[in-house]
Length: 116
Image (cartoon, rainbow, N blue to C red; front, side, top):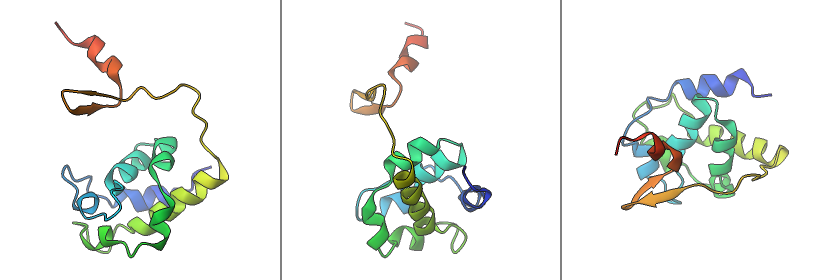
């Protein structure tokens, strides 16, 4: 079960639209997206985005955070990696991500509700 501490850690995030933590990640990991996923209880999505490279990183993402010293990004990512290893993610349904005119869309069924 997910601990309340991770929810508390993620609640300090400002959910920046153009997150400087993600822009300054030298490994092109999107910590803002991971934290957003955790905050809105999409744990599997957060765990899937985490990578082992975060464990040995000096966390420039934390240094560029707009909420200094309140979001421990490296600790959050370490937690996700630990949970990911404890409960491996099984992809039962395949990938439905797509790009439309260069815009990444995670749920193409969103378009079925559009007025034509």
